[in-house]
Amino acid sequence: MNENSCPICHDELSWTGEYHCQSCDENFKKIGFCPDCDAELEKLQACGSASYFCNACNELKSKSKVRFEFQPS
Ligand SMILES: [Zn+2]
Ligand SMILES: [Zn+2]
Image (cartoon, rainbow, N blue to C red):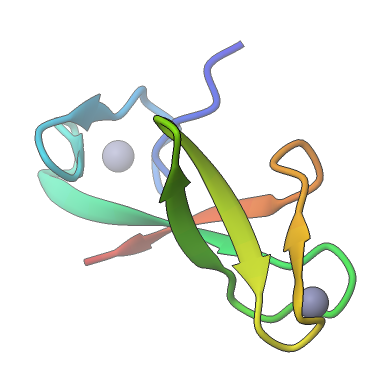
């Protein structure tokens, strides 16, 4: 399953430094939201993998539970 699809046309997004939809000719950024309080999460790079921190809950969130949304950048 492709997790990076365009929110408008659902085509696969390509990665060019940002997410890009060739069909819509739009760039998107991927934003994570807290599964518990719905706040926007801060992305932390650690040991080569990304983790997501909620400033409202004051804790790290498991990537598998984070809700991702693509927004036009
Ligand atoms: Zn599109
Ligand atoms: Zn939270």
